[in-house]
Length: 288
Image 1 (tube, rainbow, N blue to C red):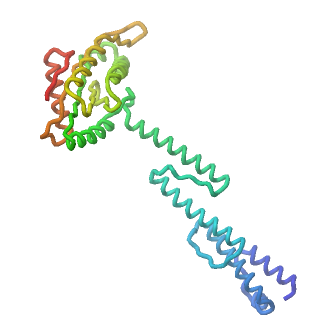
Image 2: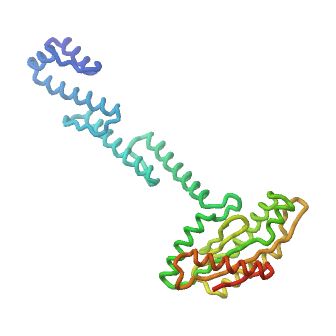
Image 3: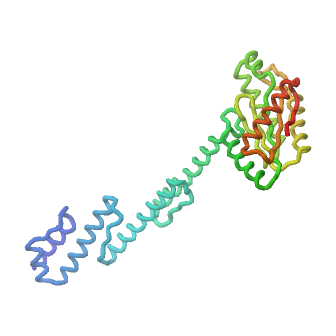
């Protein structure tokens, strides 16, 4: 075949949407058997480049060569990247890419940003929106775990229930914004009384719950009494020139061998809180 015709045929194979397979091609095969190898190579490149452009990463090409090897490497990298992306979707933010040049930096930045954002959302979901201490969800998770350990290992598990005395009067007299300030300040003060292994959470409204695993009654009582005194000795500032005094009632209970869930302890702590309220408030009552 004339060199110019052969050149034009190769250009068509590289540029046209459909590879030529006509009499001219058959003649090229007859005139030059090596052209068959070139044709198959270009055909394989066409097919693999097309499937990659369509996002098909499973197409298998048997031909070999420098260009095809690079394209197959890209195909393998994209296949692995797809797997990594699925892992990220499942919450695995440890995935990092170091085999795709500039794209790697963008991918790794995306992953680290998602990790930070997800952790922030988790924190937000487990914190009370007003006081920024653990919320009911965090409390339930902590109690479930702590109750299981205390039950299996026969250890103490004390639960405090706090209720701010006459809190409705604060809202009615000074407004709900002032009540919110009291709740925030109250949370800050009482939170300081506990160990890092404890939890102090907002239970709802002006009620709070503290859970103390593996502690003796005497120590738990000391913490409760210290909470009472701390609140009594604090001036709660609700405006630039207005401060008020509040008190708190506390109920305390411990796990019992017959308890089936942490709800049993909470019920006794609530009953002890009831006794504190009806016994004059500003006190700690215990129901073991």
